[in-house]
Image 1 (spheres, rainbow, N blue to C red):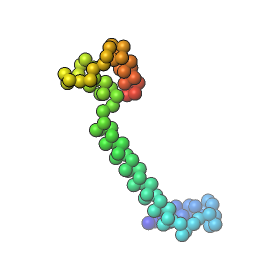
Image 2: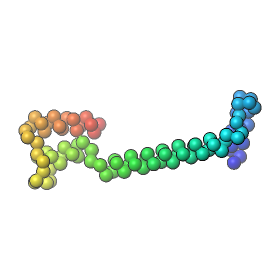
Image 3: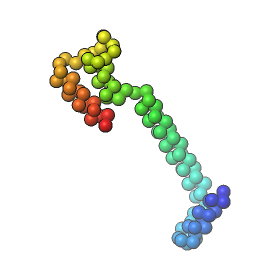
Image 4: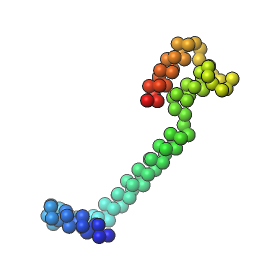
Length: 93
């Protein structure tokens, strides 16, 4: 709470009394909380996507000749496999 008063005093000192809105501090705090919770949700969803979703290189490895699954969806020829590999590497990095 003292931190808010220090910030207000700093604003009054630099900008004058007419630039400080005392009645809007609660609204500003509410908006700040909304932004904080929204950013936490966005970070949590991003981490979940990174952990649980396969990236392009993992998807390529599932289809290439080094795959563990014998019933995989194979590439038609080597040129398609290499072009998909280059795209996967570019998409990963």
